Length: 106
Image (cartoon, rainbow, N blue to C red; front, side, top):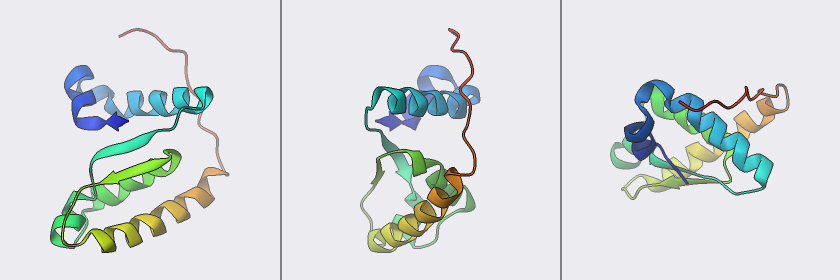
C-alpha cells in the first residue's frame, strides 16, 4: 500500500513523487500488488466536485492494482469518474515506458 501521507512524513514532500514511482516499479518487478491510497478523490467523494489535482493524482494510480477511496455521499460518482480516468490513462501507458534510474540511498 502506498499511503502517501505517511510516506511524505518519512521522506519529505520533495521526494514523494519520485519514491512513489520507485515503489511502483519495484512492486511491478516483484509481482507484488499495489494499493494506491490516501485521500484519492477526497473532494469528489465528500462534496461532489473533484479538484484538478485529484484528477491528476487519480491518473497516476493507473499502474496500481487497486485504488482506495474513502466513504462519502458521492462515492458512486467517484467510482464512475475514476474508472473513466483510469481507462483513458491505460490507453496512454502503452505509448511510453518510464525508466527507473539507479537506486541510491538518501
